[in-house]
Length: 316
Image (tube, rainbow, N blue to C red; front, side, top):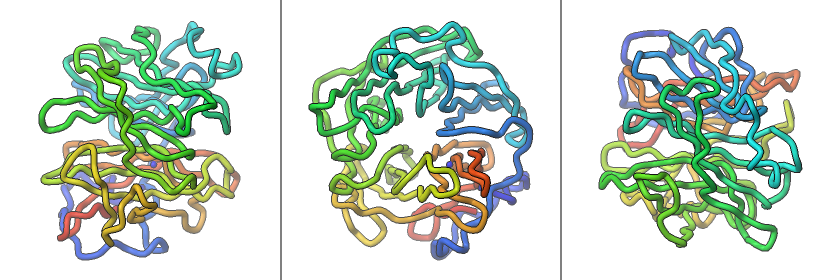
């Protein structure tokens, strides 16, 4: 989850030659106001403004009219979400939402868990406006227990070219998984769990899949989050001609075998950028993520996202 050129309204060219080394990645673009976020997801509303949801008490919300100045907009569930407490140890801190706008309403997948545990669940809520207090609990989507070898957090919805709905998710354990959903309800349509990326138990999480041209791109975060300025999060990507994979890195290594092409990493006073979300905006794709400052504070990062001559994502 960077960009000075983000402030320029002119659409930048989307073809460049090679991906930069980590030290050459652009810094986050200018954002102002309430920009303390963790695990952000963003959608553009029908009126042209932006709605951000992120990890926080009962899922925190922020809004912006210009993608620069952000303000607090309350929470998804101001009255609490009692159905999540069996997974959170009784707390109200809900994680890693995924926000989208489809069929005239807002869809929100989000996770309930405790740090380091895979006793976890992903739930769905919908809203006609996206505003605080207007969300309806739609039910449990995926659940994991300590006996499972995967973890039901970090959800991401993608609708493929045939109109089929899929939810990718996962953190550590055996990696990133995918399940099919029923479009009319947003809930699971069968019991099949597919594996689409993994590092043999290593640190991988926060999937985000988008379809562009002939490919589906799977963005993930490698390494460690949530350690302030000591965080080592970085954003990786692979691609496939099928939404269910196999996904491969630029060098041909399968993401299910630990592969991934780095497109963003920490540098200077930007630490552990990750938990990314791709937004299709009027001027092209935008990568939204969080990072940590030298003091350990989490901040909103935004960059323009272009594609090089071989069709691989590059930050601008």
